[in-house]
Length: 396
Image (cartoon, rainbow, N blue to C red; front, top):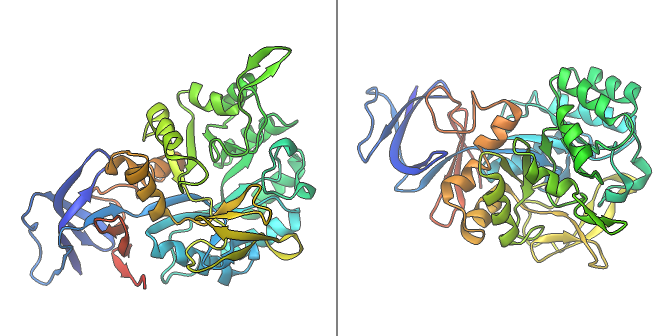
């Protein structure tokens, strides 16, 4: 069956232009520009978007949960329900993310993911998982429990990679830790993206790490070193290193809370839309309305948090405890508050993360041959409809 989406403003990586799209077998096979509907078969299903925006489906590389579920609840049901929450907000591909934990808990997370990804109905594409820790710097632990933070252990991480059988897509670690460079080499050989995060590294350490595969930076500005003095002399931290290393890609939590609009725009100006990914880095309360309290984490390690001002906070309000954003909010913040062009805001949520992970041949932009994954946005940049693999998804 052929579907034709017309009377739409198509969001390309470099512009927004009116046009139409023909879809067959879940794949884009024709893109026509202008106000006329493209040629189609006589039995094609015609979908009039009435002048709304059509964006590629969002690609999320770092989320811990949503809809009241944490991915580390470690059940297939929790992973599916959290993923579906993000799908309703336009995210058609995502990496469930695990926080630092003991090896058995991490294996349970991977096993639950393996069962969840077999679900074929109404679930985003789940190409793998993101491991955030446990090999992090204690000085930059953020909201992660210190009892699980440790130095890289080759026997442990190699066993986890073997157990995952290709299901680990990226792994965040502090590259200055003993054994972290060897870990980067190992991960890169196995097709896993090493990412710098929760780090106290200085420029020389980050530059060396880049040569060992650490080419991406986890939630820029959050839980990382910056300029400091040593015996009066200033040294550059991981933050400045990410700007200085031209080919390093970064991600930013663009919920409008973790970073103010001016810093979001600064990252965009310096790194560019082709090196900057947007991430929600959300906890379980993402996508819920009317919630004033929540829980960060799971089980005995769970921490009570307050939900106010559009973000999760520790009970004493001394610090943030996680994002509650979904990806459509990130696009709105970048386009409306930070002032980036709409096509660049969408690019940072679609094509750039797809390229970072090596998925851009199939997803991330509106182009013949790519998957028919779309988010339909109104003039307020609110998601109204979602298509996954050529099928409309119920979002209510």
